[in-house]
Image (cartoon, rainbow, N blue to C red; front, top):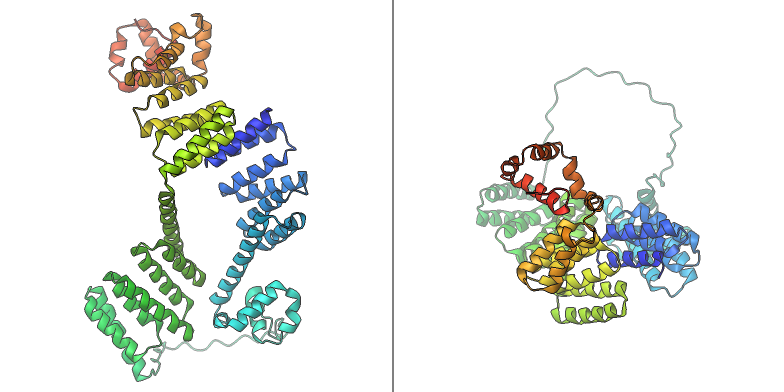
Length: 533
């Protein structure tokens, strides 16, 4: 297996374990060695997409297509990146081009279907948000017309017989298509002579029907009761308001708010649904309908029905996008993800995945073993042994940083798991961090003073048995390769303390009283740079 393949496998293993930045690093190193490898660009495109860096994902996908124009997977990567960037038409064209190469490709088919659905949803949201077309969207005949036009734009000529189409095109294009005076070529009117200033007249109250006046009065009384948390009175007043004027969505929303405060969530949902129905019939402001959907989402969230909460938050956003709804949707999506992860846990399946990983490890297929250990961890994230096993794979793949991370998780879950400490010691030893390796082996020896592997690792890291032949120059070179040692020696205060120790050995005892300085001195001692007598 050449170096490029090793880097690709390490990248795949990191991506499978959701260590995205590490995956990008490995793929980039592979590309630096082989700049004509389409697979590496495709894989890095996937990693960039996972990292939400869609512009870079698109760039890599285009490079993969340039290197391998007949490869359907590269078109799938490009289509996904374009979709994330909101370039839906370009994404559709890319998926369709990929399907010309591979008509049965499920990834391309699924991607194309999702983008078309997103485009339809965006279009409908725009039509629903505009007061000129809001009422059209509830007409099945109109929706069929719009869908037909999206599927076959050439049918525009015959569809123009429907007068609603001109309005629709005006909304979607931002142009006043139905008007004859789109370009005003007339002379500007002469400037108006300023009228003499007069006292502003108080705008007269509109002459409302008696039932509307009574309804508004009851609503105000309900609001006062609501503020005082007198919910019983608030319900009475809002219900009277509905009796006087059953066509105002606000009254239903307010009544639902009271039920929400009383934790009567089912009643809250029912009133909101009534309000939405009434609002649609009476062409209510889309912001009020969005509010009803949001309140239904809040009620479902309280009922711990997170899937329904998500659905209604999304419906609210389709009516009116606000930061508040976006935040609520993000929160509930996070809860859903956590619930799914919990429901995914299955120690029995984790054990089966671990056994498959063990077999692959014995065969030397470390990259594939990582995938099975990762699946086992997802199935049982509290099993320390799984992290230890995956760390062993990473070590074989020379991905020491990933292996170290797994070892740290392993000993965090089970501080008495000796193999985790030993494995951590070996990885640190491989990373030339001898003092940290010694500390890890010491932890293992504390657990089992007679463990031969821990004792052997400890001896291998100490100055007396480090195969440096006690050569001061070799000791210095190894110590100076440790970033922690470099940091200590760059510290002006520590340099001053070291000089003081040389001139006055008794000063050491004073400095050792400071825990931070004592730790740094211990580090220099362990590295062999100083001797304490």
